[in-house]
Length: 449
Ligand SMILES: *[C@@H]1O[C@H](CO)[C@@H](O)[C@H](O)[C@H]1NC(C)=O
Ligand SMILES: *[C@@H]1O[C@H](CO)[C@@H](O)[C@H](O)[C@H]1NC(C)=O
Ligand SMILES: *[C@@H]1O[C@H](CO)[C@@H](O)[C@H](O)[C@H]1NC(C)=O
Ligand SMILES: *[C@@H]1O[C@H](CO)[C@@H](O)[C@H](O)[C@H]1NC(C)=O
Ligand SMILES: *[C@@H]1O[C@H](CO)[C@@H](O)[C@H](O)[C@H]1NC(C)=O
Ligand SMILES: *[C@@H]1O[C@H](CO)[C@@H](O)[C@H](O)[C@H]1NC(C)=O
Image (cartoon, rainbow, N blue to C red):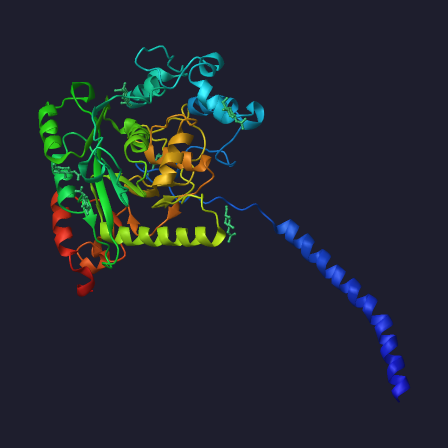
């Protein structure tokens, strides 16, 4: 009995094992063939079209499926061409020592390689890029192209003491948060409402009342006068305002939509010079509402996590790279000529990199300084939040999405409900009166909800 069983077992083994193995192989082959046949490449879903366009898909332009940075030359798009030239110039493999080139380039290399330059705007030695069909473009696009080589404009109103300790001439305070708010000369009421509510300068408590931090608010302005359209002369009023509040930064460039990117660049320059130890930077519009206390809590948490990580990994010289906002992925340029966001295909080809909507974003101070540096190698782009996305992309970073950044507002039914603001960090858009009302309502939020 035992022997027979053993014998049967061996027989079974010798017979069945090869059969089973062949069977498995067959199944494997069948499955692979099936998968190969039925495979279709993943579709890239377009989540979002840069704002201002009608939802008419036939008006959307074609775009390449490749990655955002693309060394292939897009021969008919001006920005891509200009950027391509810089990419080659600053390519560390082709050129070796980038820092050496960066330092040299402004004086020697640039004019040699192509006849334009970054900083020399005043003497008009720089050439304006030539572009096919320039004359048929909207005015703002033409104005942008003819000044896109300029990035240095003098300060008209400065705040050198913003981060000085107790107004003394030595020692810097390190604000936990510096709030840089894009505004225009005429928006006195917005600025005042911000000062009285979420943009208060000074020590601000966190929402959970544990740790707050020092907050400093500055307003970023360009020039608004007869050259930007019919504007009443508000120069003296602005000066009075600045005497009273000392929080205005104004540069000598036309304050227009396509010049907003300049506010980022020039603010970074200012930050590096006058407030380099700020821990975090908020940059946003003057028609948003920020729950500064909740934002401080969030930032404290990130900061503490980072410090813990630093201690644990012993990487003491690693700075925090935080960039957070309402992130938009796979957006395409707006090709609708009637909108203010219109970017013609002759100017830029390709998708936009991931970027955070410009209503308001927060990033770490150390990252601001790195953004400043990398921006010197990226051509100006007329849409400021997209430009920030390009700079981040170049640093190999991605913006972090936070659902508390509501740049498209709360659902309409929730706007009147105070408790709906509990999880909000930023909401767009609120006028000055709404800011004051909301501020008052939110004073004792946790008790109510
Ligand atoms: C979409 O665009 C096409 C052609 O440009 C036009 O005929 C059509 O009316 C548009 N549809 C909408 C809903 O705007
Ligand atoms: C890069 O070039 C700069 C200036 O030419 C020089 O000071 C620096 O030491 C160089 N760095 C390296 C890694 O070669
Ligand atoms: C500066 O301000 C801090 C509080 O922010 C205070 O403790 C300190 O005494 C002040 N120093 C001077 C010289 O006023
Ligand atoms: C500096 O001092 C002035 C009064 O002398 C005060 O109004 C202002 O708020 C102070 N600035 C800062 C940043 O503390
Ligand atoms: C930006 O500002 C500069 C300097 O004032 C001006 O020459 C240029 O036309 C402006 N660009 C736009 C798009 O308005
Ligand atoms: C951390 O790094 C420092 C020098 O960089 C070294 O002296 C120290 O021993 C390191 N500590 C640990 C726990 O690795």
